[in-house]
Length: 161
Image (cartoon, rainbow, N blue to C red; front, side, top):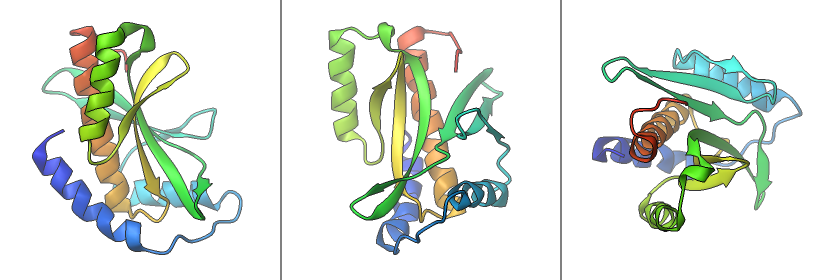
């Protein structure tokens, strides 16, 4: 992750972490994500799971990267938390040494960590659902960049996600 993105995201999220978390009635959380994405002019699709799918297009590199915003929240310590996640590779691309490096990388990350879900490796950022439109966009930007960089590292030139 670039130093610039790390600094922007840390500043942007500072206020969200201190803000009180609003309680949402069923379905309103999804509408709030739509409003935030639209406020930043981010194009998205809603997948069959209700997650918001955003496709980043890195035209200069000739690559794309998928990033998702969870369509629902989970309550952690009384705070609604939403996930931003980006697939980077199939989990079978990892051997023991690569898995240990991912754990080390997660330890160094200021926001987000590596997780395996099903058959895939994801970079996941968990945010209070009070994140503003700009803060959500910053998290999407970071997840896309980190996941695409890891995809290149693990798979070479393949662009599967």
